[in-house]
Image (cartoon, rainbow, N blue to C red):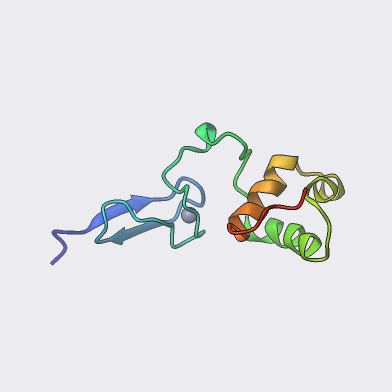
Length: 96
Ligand SMILES: [Zn+2]
């Protein structure tokens, strides 16, 4: 029975899926909780970064660099770097 299923579309990674929940917590594609938001309304997030672009950010962060230095090093905006780190380590205070 598919009567109780809802079709969802993620505005961040464009993933589409069907679930029994009217409002799932996370997108199964990118694990984002902000999947329902239109990117333009999401202040602080400039653009959705593909996984390949996140890896260099996270490698530097794990090596002890802060957001500001990573942003300069990789030519990203500060908010882009911050968002990637916050998304990956939601429990942590992001090191600036
Ligand atoms: Zn997604």
